[in-house]
Length: 270
Image (cartoon, rainbow, N blue to C red; front, side, top):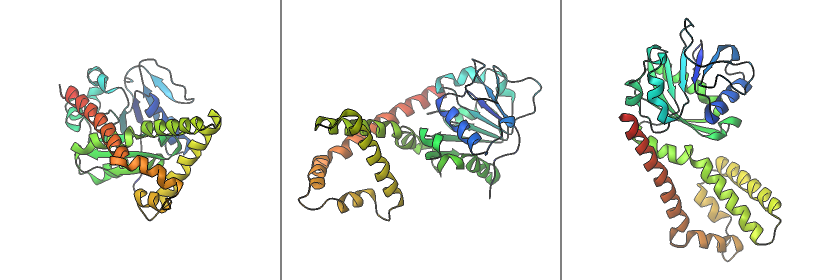
């Protein structure tokens, strides 16, 4: 079974997503705090026991793994620092829309892997999509092993599909949160207290998601199973299914996100 690379791990930038990943790694014992260095502009981090610096540490042992967690628009700023002269075995990037070629043009590494995590990685229920041009099975296995405690890990064969993956699973939690909010608001509109409607909506989506994850049928088939002819669930589904309203809405939603990813990729190409 593959294991993460032994040696220092540098996180360049540690915002919401990278911070969620780091906390999960530390909580599960997958990564030792002693092996981690965070490089960010503020020089501070709300995680105890982690070394934090504002620039690449001079004379430090070469890192085995570097993860880029800055905003995609900051890639050229980072590329003008001493980090461009560092050559880790594995360079991971969670920069949305920044392609492998754009990373390879700016940074050195034995293998470069794009990663697209989503926020539930913080509780080990996330999705992490990976893509690399490298065929080095050891380094690909190390990337898989590092991401394993975060949730479901999927390798994406064609980098051109990464915009779609980002729109679906990367941005997806935001869309689900909005759906839960709308579902709770609809319950409140029927007379339930706001806070109770919200709790019921959250619990309903949590339970339905768990059931779908362990079912032997597709979510669409499950919807039909619970909808008796002429019953109340069927009446509600008729609204969502009319002229494929919900499908069309989600297609438009993901397409908008994918377009934005493509725009960021074009900007990173220069």
